[in-house]
Image (cartoon, rainbow, N blue to C red):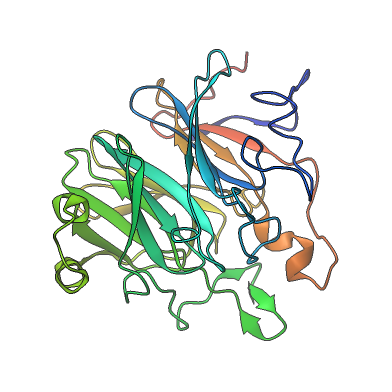
Length: 308
């Protein structure tokens, strides 16, 4: 296992796609501005999708027109389309978390109100499914432990994060998902996409998939290997298609590494969020260590790839 480097900063940083999109302030229209971006994901066609929770404060209600998906051409920065997530989808208490794609459908997780969201990309229609289902709710018996302590949302109240990570199987037949604290479940995508499947039948079709620990984020390769970050030990792990789990790396600097991404060259990129060190979890006092890091590792070979 090797690092490609811990990159503490990038020279010449510019707002993307432009300053106005990144210039929202209370009172300003949010239709064409980011309020609170929680996820970036590259779709199979190469376009960049931005998940905007629309919530100025963690756990707060989305503001009008704030919750949305924004599809961008990464080469030009041109915004191709905005997909609004109205109040019937992004409810008060919702926290639209992450996104994955399967054909003409996108799947999202609501880590606040515990549901999956099925989005028909062609029609722009969205549906909430498995709303408050056992498979989408966080369990109180699986606390998030970091630095030897339970992460708390407020004093003596462990942080509970409902359905958060998700992946689509390489053949597109299964959606894997779970609360941040685990465990993960699986459900056939054909049932998710079918408007005629009842909520009862869909819930009955959910099956256990993997008993994973609390994780920062995940990504899946074309062979079906799952890469994830283990919050408890600052580790990077791989779960292969047989279910075998292997630790690839452990480093104290990977503190709440989130949103791993596999680049075309096979390298794994990890932003280190330090989420549990934010002031909201420590009576208003931030414990974050700057600079924030972006990490590149090679999960397959044992030599360092030179930085460029």
